Picture 1 (cartoon, rainbow, N blue to C red):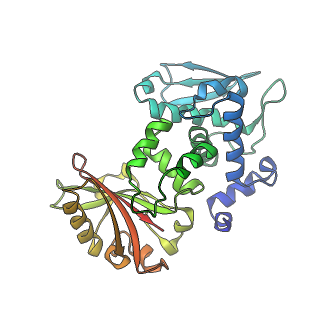
Picture 2 (cartoon, rainbow, N blue to C red):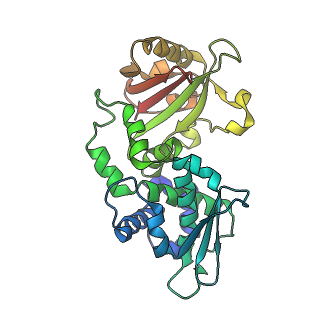
Picture 3 (cartoon, rainbow, N blue to C red):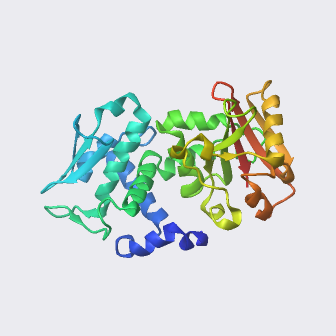
Length: 309
């Protein structure tokens, strides 16, 4: 998509021009994921990343002494991947950290005796970490398998589509919700939607809904379709509070969910007006009605909202 050339990804593609050799970042990551499943002979998820280690000249080991989740170091003729064994208790996150560290090797030429850095990026730079996160997502959820699975599911615009497919995909690929949703909504995207998660913070004030997660295609990340970013580390008081029509809509939705965990609705886009979606709704050129899929989890007091674009 052309809009990608004007954002952060476009900047990275320019910085990695020699490495990409005319490919887009998406194409390059896709090639890496295809190389992974072809070299390891895997055809169905979940995909074992450990089978890829010999092809990337990696020796992996658990190390109690490291203070981070994982790290990789280049030695004279290979790479040493160290991972914190405490992560083993959370297999899905462990897989992601493993994939992130493997991703670092794709910025080296490993055809010679000693791996040579060909990225031109500073070690530990935000650009490199972003790229490794993206490659990790493609390793955990390669394009061909996820596209095949999604092609057998109901389209997200279908009334029979269910958000349960997300939990099913998490089990299938043994990954985390942020990795999956970023992969299929932001990276390519495979679902043309905005996915929002709201939480009811009753302990703050009665019936206070706040936006705690947002996943949107890159074309909607501009100021024109602005949905404010979220930094959970800043605390609950810094999360964006739901106001206006959107507040009433979510409260009504919660009441409907008493009888049904998942709902499909076609609603006037005006019913979603209000912070933190005001800018998006104001500028989004669409029909007067939009398709909404939602689910509610009483224990976490959260509502998931998928707005089909």
